[in-house]
Image 1: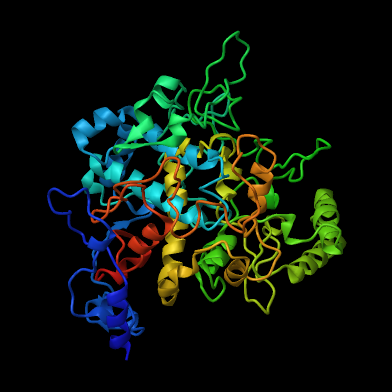
Image 2: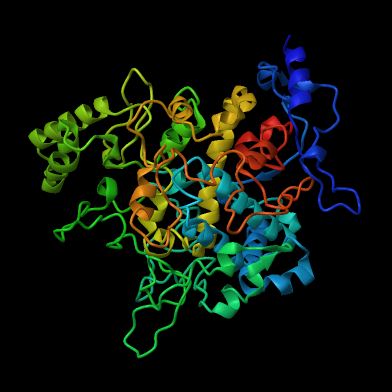
Length: 563
């Protein structure tokens, strides 16, 4: 029976061959993306649930027959490979796309050109096409693939782009007190607190990484960036992003590729965990919501157990439940005017501000409020204020309300990584961090592989009923449906003149919609170049499903190789 189901699935699913398209084609189309030839379809599609557990004398038998490249954690790289990765990053920064492609081929792209892919996602007039919604992972997976292919064009021997396991460097993390392997050290990305006079990162392998100055000739309507891969990029052509000058004491101040952090005049990447615009959460009365840092510390609060919870489809049963698990949520979890809303927004902050950590009465009061709030949370809504205070979640749903995964490092770093639009200025931290989130998604997709026939439960329509089925009952997290992040960021802005807020999902974020249509992606997969419009969200999920993906992670390597 299992083999019969696999044969039917083989006939209905498409995948990417690891071969180039025939000469004279423009990269093929999705019809050309067929499964690699193999008689053991049950093994390839992992319908045989026991295959993963079969062991041989030499180790476990691979489940899939495709042979993807393997992304590895930064600390596992040999010194030789690490040096090559770092050189490749700097090459992407220092060479223009035109120069690099003459030397390294079509997959080379300048770092700041790729930064604009991220900028454009946040400046789309329909509202953010890269964050806080079902599209978060498909957009960032595409961006990481483009960056990885660019790195590999320079140094093919590195195998793949490394990822950063943030739990290793969090409070009580595996490498937090390891002088050699701590990520915030001279051996990797430099100090957690920028050591320069304006918080510049002046140590580490990427010290003094330049933040590019803006000019219309370089990034505007008349620039080469306005047309790439033979296609016009509306975002660049219409100049959706023109940054403001920084704040200096001169008559004329430089304009850097920064958005919300544009006031900083540092010409290199800056990092400041105590950034008032970050985790302190300055309130209207001038006081800080988190005077000692979010979760009671300026450092990252995230464990490997927290990582596991989001990757487990027993807890996150749909694509949107996974998204609302990895992303921060807000007081949207409670309806204004309810007792829970008052407890969440007034009573709990007041208790936390007292900081009587050695007073048992204070501890009991905090725990009582926290438990009351957690018991009242909807199963599809997490809450960042409960960070570090509650780990198990309400029992009927078996979902842990864990420290949030995405956005935490952005907020904890401050300045450049905090700046949503231009956060890839922190190149190694950004790519490594988001690759770790992508790794979590890969684990979830493998564990939830029974959902592939249902398109991973990714939204396919603007039906309210469908949104409720995919996301559960309201209230929802910041990622939606009817995302409150979108309403807050785009609802009152003249720039986002195509945002209406009257659909559960933003236009442009459904399964068949083009990813980041203002600056779309092309040439990420060998068998299909994205066609005329660019890859859709569905394209990327089909072509990175477990039996098709061109890359994987070292924690899933055993599914493809006998190790």
